[in-house]
Image 1: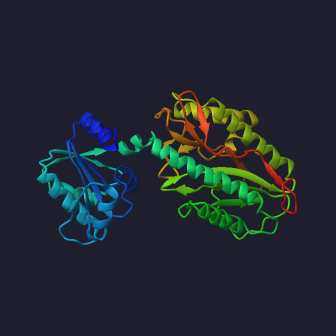
Image 2: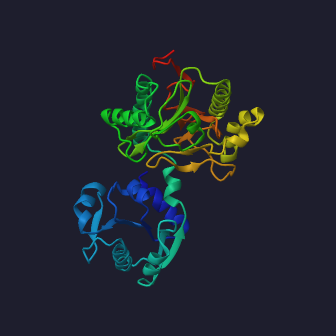
Image 3: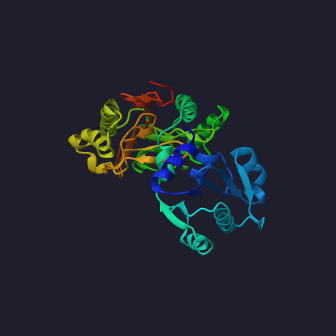
Length: 365
């Protein structure tokens, strides 16, 4: 079943005879278009792409759809909505769905003022479809994950005391690009020493010192699809306190990963991740989420929490990322990319999750 067939099934369920897609990633998912201005209009038996003069040729090459050029031929995004209403009227659509989180109130008013069709707000219709990955998407995620794992293995032979965190981050970016991936939208987190207590501590000019643990969080993008892992490295022997939190994080991760399977809810996944954190007394120092879906976006549905809105299904691709963060001391996090299978999960990023200790010269111990 194609994306369009799946969307039309949802349209039928909602009683829609038209559906407009304007969210950047949803538009790309459905049509393949990578430009910045356009809308997909889907009817019960037709689909077309509406854009401006700048992207007319590109849309024709990327989408495989009929491309409609809006009349003004200008690059103003608001003008797209004028053309959408003309197409709605041309096709005689009476009940048209739109993505409420991707259409501003001003543009909604613009649409409403130009058509007699009923405008029906929808929420996460495409995002929910995107949670289940196609075989083609899974293959791209496998390649992105393999590049990411290779980059981690590479960086273990690169890190030396006295380097800046940005030196490590830049080398990861260079290696990923060399292997056919990209990381431009996700600059690596390299947080050493006490900076590792910051969950999103982007690489800085801080020098990496002996005895410091380093949290490294990064991913590669391959043909639009992301990988995302977290690992912990130490230059020389870390303190006993840091060894303890790394051990707790790893046990939390392994406990959760070993029990993941289809049918689990958000809250059940979160519970499995927190069991070890709670029994060790560190749950209050684990403020980040349990994990998230991954695909065209680094963070997409399902986004795990204590809610039970979502249920794991085969061919979802997710991450699990327990962490502990102690201000003034440091932190640790472990994260893998997991493909949900019929009876469990497959790890797409199998590189070691154990703490890697480098000697003071930077060599593996």
